[in-house]
Image (cartoon, helix red, strand yellow):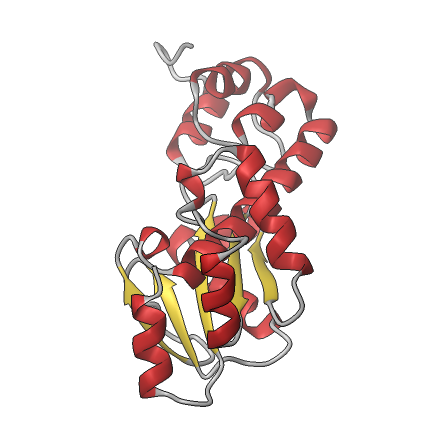
Length: 215
């Protein structure tokens, strides 16, 4: 999990290295959230061998383990964590890919020190505020990207729990805005709310209550 980090540190000694990942790209409601995590090489190696052993792609972790790793990342001196957000309204205005990239830029810019290089999950991202390398499935291959995925996922999940309190009819706390059966049934019953992404076809179809579109 530290292979890409070690290569980056060796090639760019003295430069701050960050990992970046997003959460919520495939949802029908709520923001897309990017996480950015940076730390020195010696601290990363110590945490990887110790309290963050087992850290990997947040989707492969249980909610309690994500919360535990999040608590360690955000409380450990020397670890810098930040998030960048794009709301549902911004996603509708920009499109989901552009909004995801903007959230990543915002996350990097929110770090206390701008990284000199970033490891990014997925495909290359243009116009980041620092040099970067993209790693497909990086959240399962890179320690810093995995850390960023946990920061993004936990931050977004907490937001969706709060959104569920504002709009209890949709069950956001349970499904976090993904298009599961219960969410689609609620959309058909109640129509959409401001947290929904109104340019996404399932939301449009539910609002229009197209013939045969039932759950």
